Image (tube, rainbow, N blue to C red; front, side, top):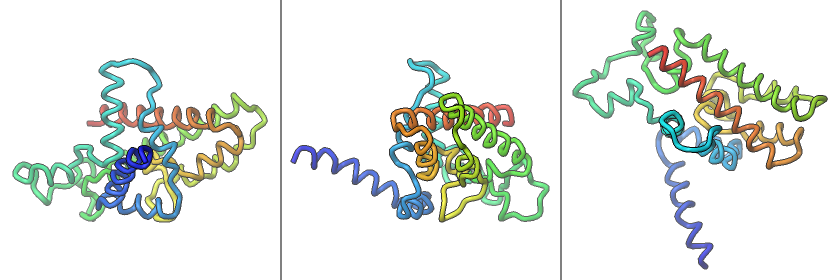
Length: 213
């Protein structure tokens, strides 16, 4: 009975999370069992450097904002302060484009803006390389072809797989966990291996967006 009561509140919280409008796609992917929640929660709480510092706290808070889509993008700011941010305000980095629907500054657009797309692809590719190299260090003759071709490194948002834009927010694809663990065959090693890759992706993104702002 105690275990049931203890697990009831996390289950209720998780259900409420999936019912959020902003999590509509996540709910769809969850229903298809495409998100590894074990690695997702582990990655969300992962810290490469132990202890408390300004940098680690900043990375942690930004990781949570990424996960919940709470970064101060223009679209979020319009909802929070409509008195300061006009509804027709668009992404200032690609205001020269003609399609208004494509340059509202959402979290998705933050990654895919034409002014940043090349760097975004470089970050995703470098994280894929880092993960593959980490596996090769552990198992030199490992066949990493399934990891290289995993949908986790694609840029677009789909309702049938978890791509790089969701991975950057901290959502770990079931396919990536499976492909890594099929090689390593040890969940206790697979988890930190994927976490380190995801941590590196978040840090690289923070450095880039801070320099770009």
